[in-house]
Amino acid sequence: SQKIEQNSEALNIQEGKTATLTCNYTNYSPAYLQWYRQDPGRGPVFLLLIRENEKEKRKERLKVTFDTTLKQSLFHITASQPADSATYLCALKTGANNLFFGTGTRLTVIP
Amino acid sequence: GAVVSQHPSWVICKSGTSVKIECRSLDFQATTMFWYRQFPKQSLMLMATSNEGSKATYEQGVEKDKFLINHASLTLSTLTVTSAHPEDSSFYICSAHYQQETQYFGPGTRLLVL
Image 1 (cartoon, each protein chain N blue to C red):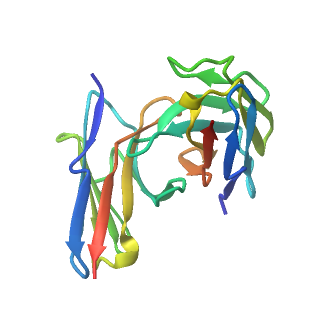
Image 2: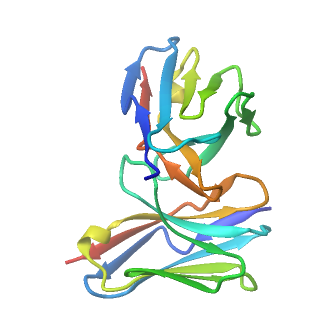
């Protein structure tokens, strides 16, 4: 069956450290993968998109890697800040227009 | 750019009534919009794909007569929850396709059916 798993439901990290979130998938052949941030009671906010032929993408303090052999994406936030505390969702897009979402990792950055 | 709005942001209604939720793309045209629902501590589940000028495509298990979708213009899609019941209480979120690749999401609508 198809699955998108994000490594842990919750992750606590000290301010200033690098947070690393994992997204693993099975039985998908994604054209690309996206990462979103969702705050409580709000809709997801788009952060980064990485295509199947790309290994790495960066945007300010964010970095995403995509390994189609391992079927895994890593999402890094460097120099983390309390304002980075939120739930982070990975989403896969296959051939159709649909996005398939993981269950999310709730990140808490401790001052 | 790529702002999506939803209205209302929250609604409380009595069981048996119908509720309409609007989704608008504010600064771009969206031929395709999507409707999701999200239960507490769960991920987003796609309910249907809304195509401007044609019928919506519903995901398996989603009743099309229960969740009516209308995409009458390139900037507006509506979801009507008909004869709402307490089990329909959820967080409903729409999104719109922007530049063929990325979906931009609205802020969501919290529905509580008493």
